[in-house]
Amino acid sequence: MATPVSREPAYLLHSRHYRETSLLVDIFSLNYGVLRLVAKGAHRSSSPLKGLLQPFQPLLLAWQGRSELKNLTDIELGSRLAPLRGDYLYSGLYLNELLSKLLHTCQPAPTLFSAYADALGGMANKDSLEPLLRVFEFNVLKELGAFPSFTQEGGVERDIDAFASYFWLPEKGFIRIDNLSNPPSGYAEFNQNVSGAANRHIIKGSQLIELSRLDLSCKETRLAAKRLSRLMIDHLLGGKALKSRELIAKTRELKKYGASRK
Image 1 (cartoon, rainbow, N blue to C red):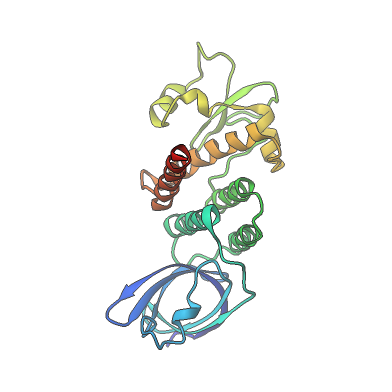
Image 2: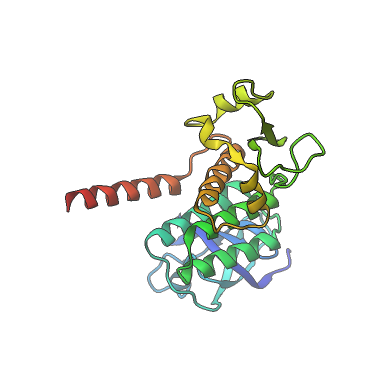
């Protein structure tokens, strides 16, 4: 019989009905990474587990079982965070979806677990959202080995030039562009694979240097970081859509519509 796990630090990523009275719960845990558990009877109104299975809250979980799908046996709440509202809630759903879709099951990722806890803590405190998201996205890319050097040009032993312009190529890094009328190898393919105008995805060397220090104080650098992280994450997703992105887009459209009606 597999050794039972007790008081494992974890967060709930997603839950859904399972059979008549149970739930399937996807969690992100400190020592076991992302995995799925069965919470038997947790969908009953009388279940003590039901009220504790809340996303964006630090939990201590216990489970056991011999099969791949383990049985959740106990839940304790850790230090309680303020509930997420509005854009913070939608962004929290986005973080959860990234973890669910990009991480391999049962692969420990303690550094990323810490980064996730920091991101949720910042959201609960209503810290500036854009820097929180970019730092977390960069941590996801680092965990997956898909984070390029922000200080070295791709394919050559040369430092990023603050006065040059670059574009990112998967598995190659940042490629310098000296003349857009005579672009380097790979730029045409890059144009075909990115959405929108490719020039929007060109990044200044000075911005890459700022990002290497996680300096997001400049609005233009934050915007460049957002475009860049989306390119990299979309490449890892391989064409899979994120429901949380669609929800965020619809919410923004409703806000614009509501503002125009006033």
